[in-house]
Length: 442
Image (cartoon, rainbow, N blue to C red; front, top):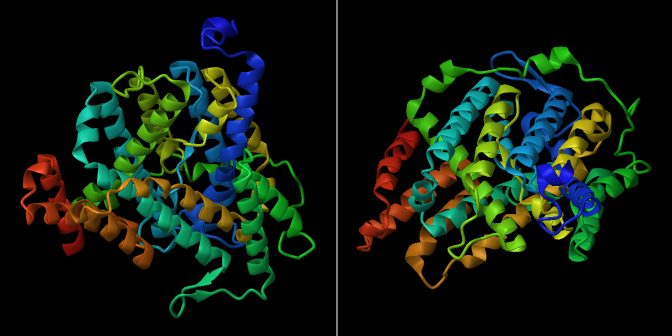
């Protein structure tokens, strides 16, 4: 039955190897369950937040729904696309939207409505097969700059929330006499050593070890129980929590946000597929991934389902490459990963006990992992570097990722127009600059 469903032998693998690959992928990305609630509700001991519409968003409900949708969509990837890819709430959009919600700028329903639009657009593009148009829309330098800018933004959040750095009166070191900051420093060292030795699941293992160290330090507070049944009353606040009224109140801003969320999801998936294809030798002579419409469609459906259940952008995790490196070649490894996520539905107390000092360091490493593409820029070509530098600098020093991405795109278009390279800009990108400019005016 396994051979019929997944063609395991045909792809040069075996069930034992697929199971190991599934476990490996889960280990490398399970940190999302610890980080996702904090991304939306902020770091700290509070059980949740109440948004501007008076809706209570609890950390436990966010964790449970993240585990549920991650498990379900990863199972769908394994069964439908037969690929060793796992999906969950992408790092980046969760902190961007979570920051706006927790600060009271927008409602939680506004964020979910945006994600519904973004996911629906992704489905349409996946079904109609106009992926090449989207790939050609953004020049390579901006494709590199967007994840890099998000990486710096996530690292900034990690330094800020752990106390390793202070931003209250200019940039400064944190107070290393505080137990929480000291634990963050210990976590940083542990994760760095594990990462240097290329230990699978380095971030998750670092989180576990540092959390245990935090017990005698008085930072880690042990839960009353390990297993917990999801509270349906809190989960109900996340289901179909759409606020279309707020979405329609600012059309230019809405268009900009849809662009940001869609492109980050699209190119994250595209990058993950390209990486897996290169590892397995599945790419054709032109570098195309076979049957790419299937994983794209699963990813898009995941984002729509995620918006219905209170999850931020569901995307294919680049950490799937660790499972592929462990020998995963079929959807059976994704089935194993998905099943492990579903088991975590009942283990929310374990993840919620993790100290901010520990999970914040995980953000620093996630941010670091998003910076590697920046080296692909040709630094001798100022015209190609100007837009990306504007994007990265504004993301890093203003902590306003939406404004940073808009300014980076506008700067890239302007520098090419004024240097006689206007024809290099995709026509639709000129159109896209209009709502971006209105975004700042309004």
